Length: 496
Image 1 (cartoon, rainbow, N blue to C red):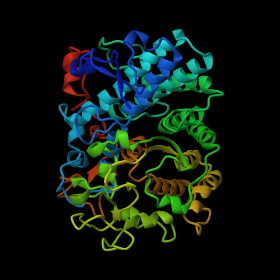
Image 2: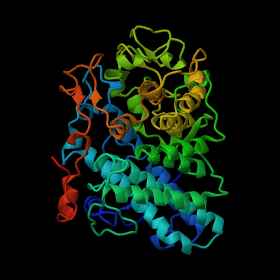
Image 3: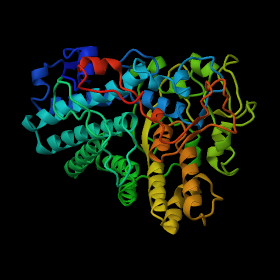
Image 4: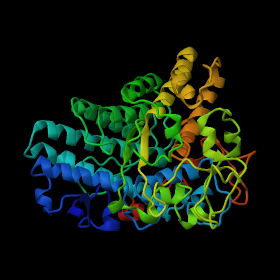
């Protein structure tokens, strides 16, 4: 299948400066080419443009091997937490992120990627939003296309603001600098908006999208629909400590999705046909990601050098808190010697204690695996956490029960209250979402410190970074220096 690249304008001076506003990046998949002027002439063409954003989600855009679309962010977010452990530093991939170095360097590819990747999505979404109303075609198609574009824009800003802005605090002005709000196709530099303003726009976009999604049935799980938009809304509300809204939207989002079986839980997390998956990217053989695939870093059986030499293992302190009868405990080998249940393709693959088998490729000759972005399990966890943080202990325990008993049939409904119940829910969340890109975000939104002590982290491998206090300036990513320069100082830097 050929890839059609349509010329488009990008959202900020960084993108214009790095790629040039004439660089074609809006990717679509028909076999014939159309001009930029025709890209939104019909809803058929607009659907193709929207499909281009879906493709960006798993494409290598900036020539850095670990940055295979959204999976790059997922890898970075867990490498910077405490629950993913490097058993050595033989491989350099993700090492500086694990050591909390790269996100504080204004010249690093990590701060560039997390800024430029999301603005690429925002820029392309803006093109759709600005043009779709004039397209020829059914109004139902226009509504659905616009709703998906609005959801992409909201989601991309949500991903970014948590990195480059200060933590959102409910009841506070949240007047600190966030990221520039660019809401129309332009390459003119814009100053950074406040954290509060960015969250207001995120919520406005999601609310508008949800209204347009009514009655829409998506083609596949790579698309957004009303339930996924509500799932993102639940994430945003949880981050803003709007716990009543978070619980409400989490329940509505997961309606119609059922939790996977224990057998499926050990299936390799590589197939978005799994009934629990709500949103993900499907990767097929003629679109293989090679060594920039998520599974080239997080699987245990694809023959990438990083997997052979420096596989990712679980924090032993977290592993020890998983109940013996919990199916999730079977995802890791605490001994490092369980060859029968944790087979590796060849003797060149190193084994370590707490080796994982959560992520596996189906075909060891290909790095292919569908990438999970949202699952129903997360919605149960959001509801339970949101209720517990409102002091509704009995309701929170009831909300947690379906997920917990699915994973462990011997689990009994929690009788804990207050902070003890919140911590039980957070342990469930850490175990359930391990490796799926949530941990840095969770630590920051809950104003928790990084604490890698007492387990299998090595101070040598972490470059001494075992603790980072809550609220420290290190929790803010720096903005790439080229953005500062290209905007002629309109965009200013975070505290260094």
